[in-house]
Length: 89
Image (cartoon, rainbow, N blue to C red; front, side):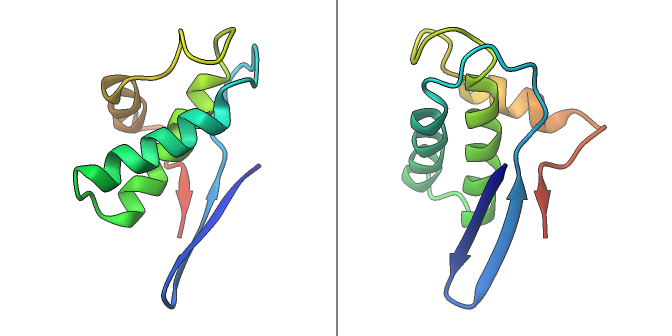
């Protein structure tokens, strides 16, 4: 359904993105991987959550747990779409 993230007194609730689900295996790994990748590149925490939500959702659109793992470009492409904002603030 999404996630709730807090840092100090700040809190955001992020809804899951809407995708055609093929397989949920690997969604959690993709979520955490995207969050940690953002941490390593020193992205703001809200951006890390945004990317994690998208990565977890996109991972559900393919079979298996890693062959279809979304790339940074896949995540960026999804976020550039004008018809949605995955995070509710």
